[in-house]
Structures are given as structure tokens and as C-alpha cells.
Length: 184
Image (cartoon, rainbow, N blue to C red; front, side, top):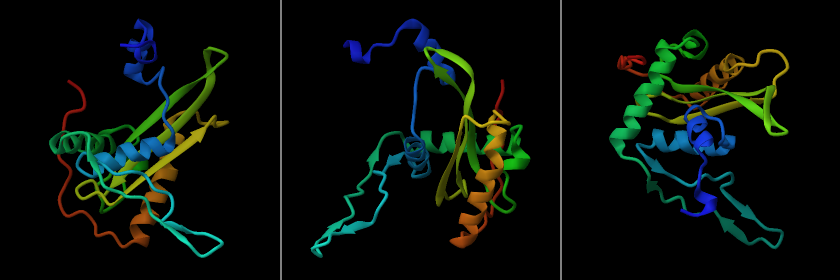
């Protein structure tokens, strides 16, 4: 293992709860899309193509997916994320009547000058309907002034996901979420 791939003992432990690593909102969306797509990662695209000044067109890049986790592992994670919404402390702020929602909150300490201070990055990422995922939404607030927990992002996540489901006329869920213990 080369130096670029090595992790010191402290970082190996802190990565278990999210310190010592970073991800952009687009990378988080890609992760959730992979889970929603039964473990197949499709390349993220931001445009459907480009028409240049001379009239030539560059089409959308290929979107062939790559399996990165098994279908059963992806489904298990989605079911667990769904229980975060049904059983978690932000259940009321994340639930959308008629739809099964799978989501995870995040509160990250911001490192400044090599030390963690009072600043946070808070987020909620998720998908709906969890039983047949159609959309992924990621809400991230960087260094919020007042509420410095993921509870700040939960109402925005719910609002955006609700509007997306309505706009695209996504059929409501027809079966209840499985109940999986979140603690042992």
C-alpha cells in the first residue's frame, strides 16, 4: 500500500463516524442513486447535451451503469435508511404522507487550521418512494448560523422531495415499511 492509500491509526478510527473524509453533495447523490438503483452506479450527468455556436451537438455522455454492491446489500441499506425516517428522532420532519422515504441525516464538524471548532455542515440525503425509488434529494447547509444540527436541513429535504413527487406525479407507496431494529 502506497503513502497515498495509507491511513494512520487515528484517522482509521475517526472515519467510522465521518471525520477524516469528505464528499461533495454530488458524490452523496451518486451514492444514494446507486442504492436506489439496486447497487448499480450510473454516471452523474448535469446536462442532456450541448449545442455549440456552429450548430454541432455533443450528446449526453454514456450512462451505462456499473454494479458496485449487490442488489441485496443495496436493498438492506435502503430498508435501514427507511427506518431512520420511520423510527428516528426526525421522523416527523422527514416523513411524507403516503410515501415511504429512506434518508440519513448528517452533522459534520468543520476543520479549521487543523482543529475542529464550532462550525458545522449539516445535511439530509434520501430517496423516495423507498419501495420503488424514483428520486434522490440531497440538502446541505454549510456553516449555518443558528441551528447547527441536521434538524435544520430536514424541513427543506421534506419540502423539496414532496414537491418533486407531486410535480412528477409519482404514485404513492402501497405497502408499509419493514420494521428493522436500529439498536441492539
